[in-house]
Image (tube, rainbow, N blue to C red; front, side):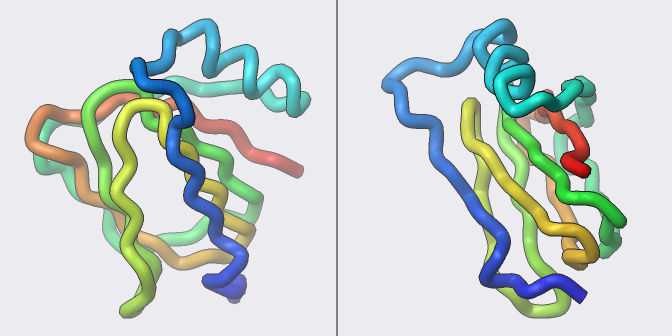
Length: 107
């Protein structure tokens, strides 16, 4: 199991939302191949983990990630980034307007 203190939430630094091309360029700079996905309002992901380091940006809407079982909660809005080390148990809840995210595995 991953250490929850290794999870990193990075807020978007600019006063405007990101453009698609900006987020894709950030992934390319790290040598990552982005994959886009969307979910409707209120959709949930049960507790799960990944065998890889997950790099994720929220593009539009909002999503809440929580570390299981009772770890910290991270609210992501447009441009915010979440890094989840391999094996980190987490859940997610999509905000009331839905969400579009882009993510990539590292390693």
